[in-house]
Image 1 (cartoon, helix red, strand yellow):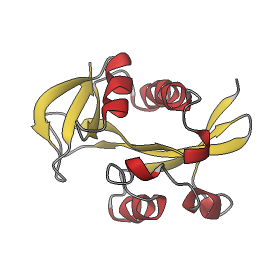
Image 2 (cartoon, helix red, strand yellow):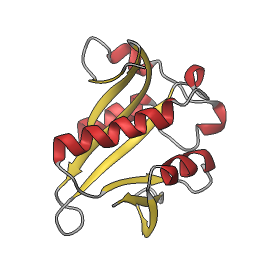
Image 3 (cartoon, one colour):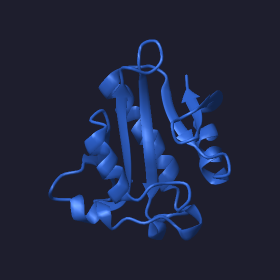
Image 4 (cartoon, one colour):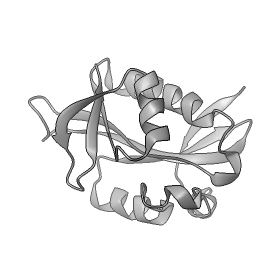
Length: 148
């Protein structure tokens, strides 16, 4: 399967805004609009569209935050797969692709993400890929996981 990650640009911005998660997930993640607004405030975030076989299926953000931890922290954030594409394994495929992408861009290092523990599907996915909970929470109260 051909998976691609593309920057959010004027060309795909409107399509990104149309992405939606399932109703049961809305309490766990911001809308694409809110995510893109946050990326304006937090310049470290790089918002990206997730494409499978040339079709937009999801969204994520990632970036390196110099002021966090001892030497800064590399984050993958806001992973969402559109509701019409859920249940097809795209979450796992794109999380692997994102880990590969950030490692190429920033070098091998720990990768951080945050999640609500009640979001059991996401927690299982992240644990399957080697992420582990640490005893920290982010500014929104989400629990932080790290992949060594």
